[in-house]
Image 1 (cartoon, rainbow, N blue to C red):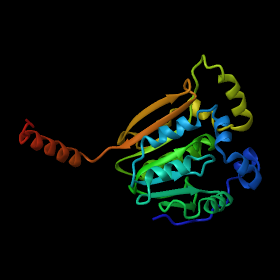
Image 2 (image 1 turned 120 degrees about the vertical axis):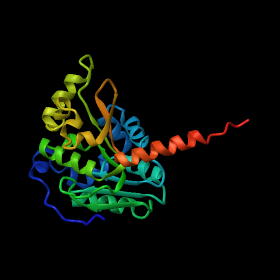
Image 3 (image 1 turned 45 degrees about the horizontal axis):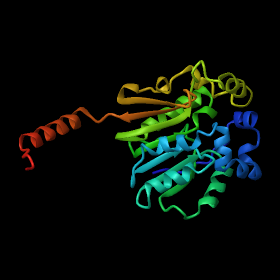
Image 4 (image 1 turned 90 degrees about the vertical axis):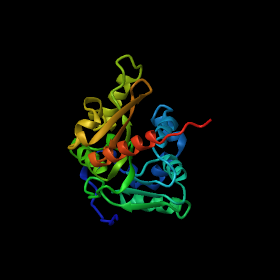
Length: 250
């Protein structure tokens, strides 16, 4: 159960991002696929598809942070009417704007005003998704959000992080992106310096997989929570029993 708690926006949001997330005109301009594609060098659709590959119909999914573009629509359609799709965001303006935007279009979708860095959810969701969120967070907040995401995953479920990454040395846009980040996204470069799994407190409780896109500029990291040793033994015994009583199909 998620309890809404109104939080004051961190001071860095106004200092670094200005009124982008508190202006209706700017938000509406950025909240389109063409804008999202330009800002991701036309990789947006590929990144959304990469996230969808880890989501199935009727699952319980938690997303940390609202995003511009059609990613929310795509996830909601993948989950369907009988799943659960909760989104948390600290910005009350964006929460209200998106609640009005989506209304009752997707029965599974609920949007809450909540700080992803301070939630306390344990073993509740099949998938927890962070889509292009970590790049905007200071290192200490990154660590809190990553660990809260991991804590919210059920055993056997997964946390999916889609975000920026350190491009290959030969990448033609590498130094342009670095300059842009230092001017407008000062927290993004930390994802160049550290792998996402190094922020995790209980790293060994998960199986980690990383995929890279667009010459290493973007990454998808999937952390699958291990089941308990007892569960693994039961599964192994069940598989053994099935093998012993297997009859070939003639």
